[in-house]
Image (cartoon, rainbow, N blue to C red; front, side, top):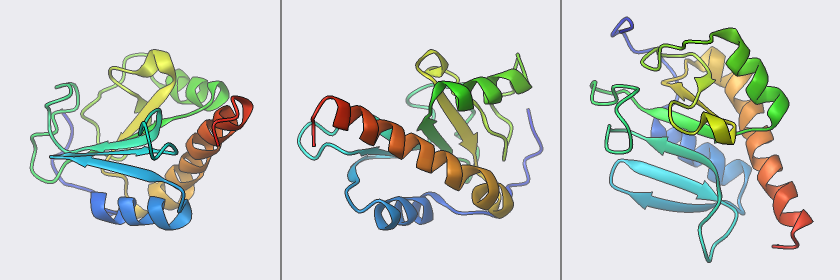
Length: 145
């Protein structure tokens, strides 16, 4: 378990605003305690990013801690391998660390709990771009719009 002190950084609502402002074609589906970001306004799938704020989807990150949330991003192979190589047995409860996703790592998803402003600006924003552009390129290859 990690230090319970939350880093100062964007909250889920600020991340939603960033994604929808930076990528206005983003389709957002919201359910209680989760947001799903895709480029398909009809099927709402696949996603390039998700945010979850409770343990309903999995318990690996201990999201029941007050104020804790997880941002998840589907990235390319090179970025995923760099993240996965850092720690072969990651602590999925660690705050402000980019880690393989606790459930969807095999699909090259990464996650971060409560990024600090510096991690957000230096690391997460570029990774969001990778995730978005990866899905946009996939859709273009398959002529999905």
